[in-house]
Image (cartoon, rainbow, N blue to C red; front, side, top):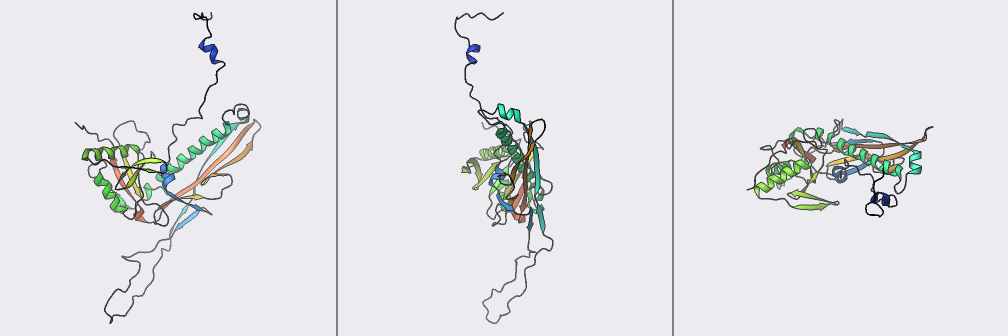
Length: 314
């Protein structure tokens, strides 16, 4: 039995049938700003291989004459040796295949194009994986390739200003960014508050970051806490990176393949694979990436940082 209309007026359920609904595009909670990939300097490759030639170094590249005594006229002789087996970085492929039913895209593409929205979300997924690989890949990932002498531990567990100062001593030649999990950034801010030295903020590339000694602390959930992006526990251990970026600065750089067929953005292509007998269109999405550390002192890591220290500020 239908519900009695006690107001003798058009009901909400009936009126809804004539109303326009304002809709959003698909909202994907896993999408992050991907600051690491946005702020690192990238270099495009033609053949997918990047060789880092290094000099076999002593205290100085070459002995030189520096003497006021006119009797000493012998100028030192020699040459600068190069490594005979320099490291080569090969681009890593991250790919996925996206399927879209053409009947869906034909009929249900207003106000938003279904194919375009599916491709957009798939591209974001690939870029999330790319940033994770830049940090965590077993071959070229930044965490795996920090030199032993560039690894330090916090003094007490939590990331203190003293610890970040010590990290700066390891990357003192024009450091660019700290990279840390948001929980680690918050833990550092608590330590600053406890000491009465709140960090200042800076706006870079459309984002607002806290800084220490003028160096931005850039958040990324790809620096995991106890192996997780979103840990449930308040406690946990993570790492904080400090990097110098740029090829001219002998720093850390990202690598990508340039001039790809179907290129949509840096190193990422979307290619149509065809439509099968069931009317399903298929697209191949690929991103080619790697990262290189040009000098050992371009990166350092603060390891085993405790993010679970809290204080009562009464």
